[in-house]
Length: 508
Image (cartoon, rainbow, N blue to C red; front, side):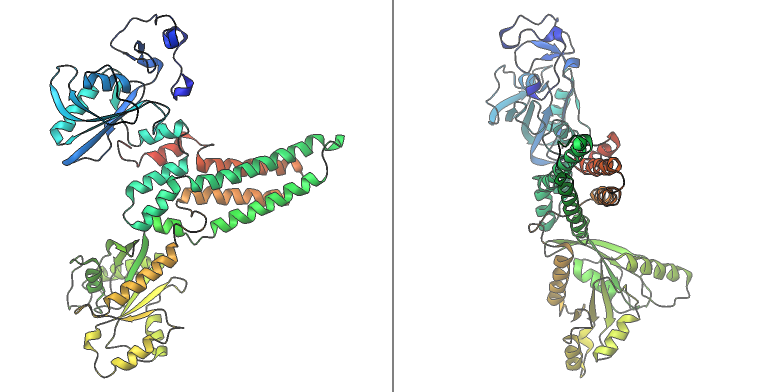
């Protein structure tokens, strides 16, 4: 029974399996079919069975309704009216009926997954029915009327898969990111994490620590008996130093994974009436912000999410930066300054017809906006359609390069220069987020960063305490290993699990 991925029933229910005597229990409303024989067992012995729509809600061509748990076999038999199930993982066409009334609900495809060869490790069934609201609600109502079945909670299918060792926490988080992915780069990163690359990296580190800790404890216990050579301690030291360097290098990734997962925060900043709101509307191809010739129209932050070159961009239009006297505009400028300090990328917008034409003058005009010196910046010279005789000299200044950031001429009115701006944006986003398919997998969660920093701190303390107290040094290795285990779920608490799974959609 344990091999099926479900808890073993009480001893009184063990008969009737593999040719044994009949089950002694009397069938009752709370009983369900045994997953391995035709007799019925008390559902409390096996745990409940959950069901949910896994294909999203709303009118659609096909809806997938999934069950997981020991009652999946009986549920599928009850709704199809057939005692024989289709072969595992083979779609079969069946008429689906309400088991209480016998009324036909739909005609669709069903598939049976026998545990542990399923997503959750339990017995599972799927019903692929027509996606009309009446059909879906009828099937759900029929499932809910069966004893031992209940609607799934958000993320409960994935949580059961985690409980049965089908995936670790990093893979579960990758699955959640894959469901929410909106760009190609996000999809690639989430798929790589869901397939276990990040978890395998942390598990390798954990195995390395386990081996080092075993050798250190052996040295502590048996070195006085000359059963353990002195070289063992040197090997442990070398292993810990190498691991500390590897963890530190992994942490110094420029937050690439987190930026790709949540989107690069870019801020459009500049003086009033230079076309910041027009730039936002041009990039998102809709009137997201009010455009007016009156300076100071934008008072609050207007934010839109974009997909630029396959990378996620969260773009914010802000109030014009100037010494305002109006209290409302002052608050808008204050918010703009705050966003500017928090930005991952700055689009600094200036009036092309009003800026100096030499690089030094352009640099001074950019500096007046006070963008953070460490934040990447693209200088956008808008209103290029108003340039006359000084257009050539300004273009030459734009091509100067260093010490200026990337510069481009743009006309929000005509769209001239938009392609170059998008190319510059895509290049900066690719640099900030990196290639999700190359190199070691990136950190994607602040939770990972927190535990890895504490792991690195414990390894550093080992190096300091190893000369004075080997017992304390061994404890530092245990702490480091616990933090790695907290990332993958091998060492965890219910609070950590609740945080991870509560944001999953129902049916996943």
